[in-house]
Length: 157
Image (cartoon, rainbow, N blue to C red; front, side, top):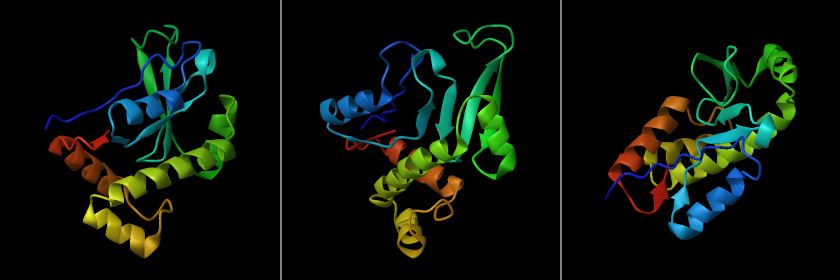
């Protein structure tokens, strides 16, 4: 099979809804999407994503270029832990608690999907549950990569 990766873009546009897009992908492609990122903000307030593998908020700080053009943008990664994270996220108009709550649920869902096809992740899931420390970022990324390259028509990254 052919590896399938879906990238949802234009999240800064009015009416853009990644949840509806993911539902449509599930129905139209008859597959199970492995969601690796969730959006931070909606429409004109879209500012970045949460990397569910590494549990980091990722922002693109365009230096005098405007949000729509990423030329010259600096990528800012903020780990979702610690007091520094609270200050950095609040400065951008986000609540760490809200982001972490949504990200933890989404990461747990990702781990459950990956555990269905990867024995190593399944073992960690059964031993430690689906908490943040249960499966390392490297283990999760490796399993998703292998499954994507396999080209199984049941899953899409």
